[in-house]
Length: 416
Image (cartoon, rainbow, N blue to C red; front, top):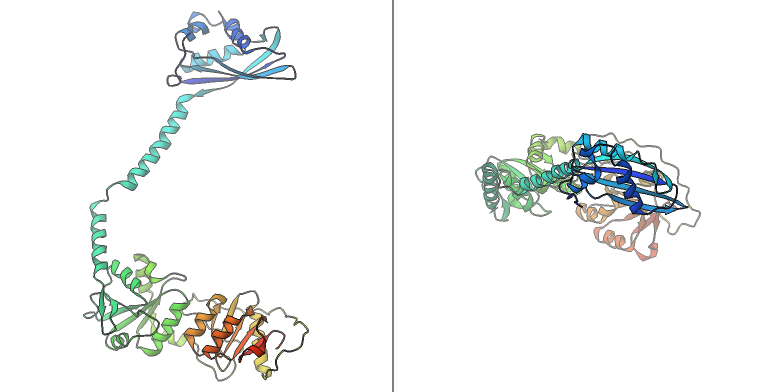
């Protein structure tokens, strides 16, 4: 008996059968051939169609439970749509299998070519994607890649401080000052040759001399470190313009479009200096430093929830004025839940606000911190750093360091 190859089958007839009794698979196949014999004429006789290979092997899967038999019937066909549908409909005339009543229902006729077509489409997409990713770049891409590599190779060292710089520093009337070598390389990559790096935290004499002779633009990272370097630049050099990378980004990772956007939006250094907080002769309860170039945002001070201090004895007598106590308790209340810290000068004016993770680096960088107020617990490591930096007060929610263990004045919410 002939059998259709899965490759040549065009349609699959899928049917279910329910039998009131227990029968075997050969009984079902015999009923299919016997009860459809002579029903459709010689051209659509199942035995002849199977012998000629136009109908494939009839597959019957059955399961007997509770004295009843249920199963599925699958018949592959290479006939056309109409003939296949006729064969499928003829199956439903079967009402008995052996001595048992039966009900056969055709669920669907599946076009095998649709699933094959779907496979072809998905595979074609995958092949095209791989082709695009591995194809040879066009001439413009090759030219840009070569030009970019050449520009990066042009980095030089300038001045007696041997600072990383572009090749056009000497002859350019205006220059761009960045933080490090990686920043210079990124700007060179996009064609900016008048770039020079500070290459450290202190401002070299070479930068100070260039700032006197040329029009300068300071281009710093969009983080706290960028703010600190910018403050130092403005205090010791004659910077003309200032710009900053987007928040959280560094100059070395900016794209060409982002660099151009930053340079177009540069502002005069004088305007930045006006925004920097000046030390106030009196204590300013509402003074909050706004980070340089932060998007304009009104800081709304909400009435803080009252913190009920724990009733325990004061661990160390502290001589503070009522005004100082009020400022410190307001600051501590303001920081609840923020995991942040205020750095204060000798007049109790806020120098800056930083995350807890940056307290140590901020104390070292500023060098003029008199007090630190933060939402956390005072640890021994922070006390050691604060002592070396000349800090006098550490104010926090709680402390793991006893006042007798340090020369600093340690204050908690209960002490003030």
